Image (cartoon, rainbow, N blue to C red; front, top):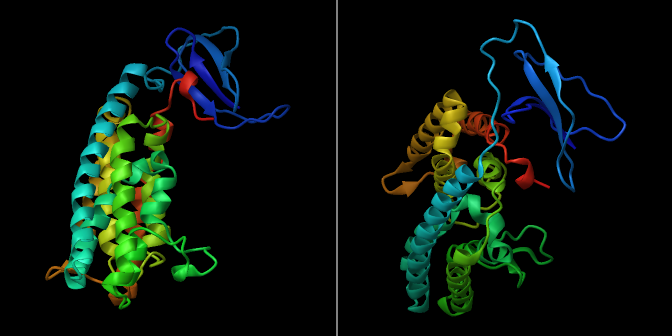
Length: 324
């Protein structure tokens, strides 16, 4: 369970052990002002419990401030703003995917290649919502990794499957059913998302998880199926993380203004850095980067990930909505 030392009156957190097993002990060093405190225990399953109160006396701990979990009102505000932003992004996705489908169905594969990237990036900017999309995420943006026949497997669908066909000489006839299925899935997403529930605790986690996936799949070239646009996808992922930080900005600024500023500035700087790899209207392939450029870019993304990884610690859910 997660064990926290809290102010008995306000519920503010002064110290915390994230995981403590039954029958075990762990040290927890902290500085607290004089006051009345409780232990609060949040198990993996079941309800949170609190201990009796204990008083701390003395003159130490002046200026120490507790961490306050998000209130229901703050959660609702962030969720509403997030939902609106994702719905707006899905609208852009529907339009772009329909344009891609029209080009392929018309047999204009050159236009298809031009329209593929805007549609794909529209989806990649929705990074925080993937867990909510359930099976549709795999249908829309699945990778061939682990499929018995790889890129030739019938289970390989979505944007990356269309990318493979467009950049590997497949005919319009063979790609029509693939792009039709993609367009259908995107429209299903547009219909279903307004009624889907996002887990509140997922949002603070997604900010750094999006860029962790960027390091693992985009900056290694794992997802490249021929367009060599991983750096464009990395920028779209960065913008997806920026959306998450934006909807949490007020709550984060109230609790840790320095972290809020550092996260925002780090993402803005990374977005600008990635944008520099779009030259003369074309994105630089990963293979064209020098070793120093690759190291610098990986370090930049890694640094931002480390900053964003602090957000879930600061923006904790109330015990009743704690992650299970």
